[in-house]
Length: 88
Image 1 (spheres, helix red, strand yellow):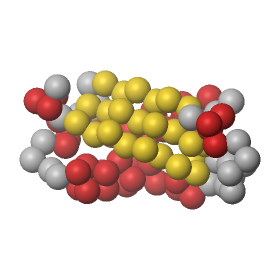
Image 2 (image 1 turned 60 degrees about the vertical axis):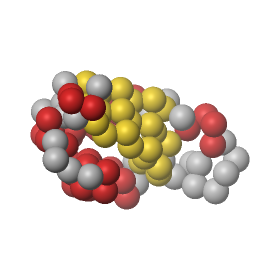
Image 3 (image 1 turned 180 degrees about the vertical axis):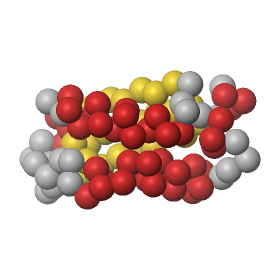
Image 4 (image 1 turned 90 degrees about the vertical axis):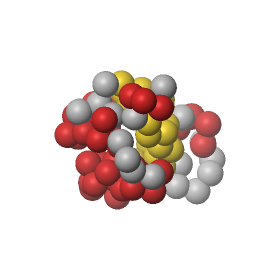
């Protein structure tokens, strides 16, 4: 349903040089809730050396900065799991 948005998200996250990216579209789980039609509900699992030495908040900030304006339209909700290769 949100294939183009997911492709844009993947492309923007490349700036973090990820070794793994998994994106799950969970939009169907939110049908009927306010905002469900405003954009995708996505779950992101990303592994990147860019997160090394950073706490959860800083890791999420790196993701938000990479994603940019997608969070203000095409993506309504983004659940982030950000890990380093050492975390695995």
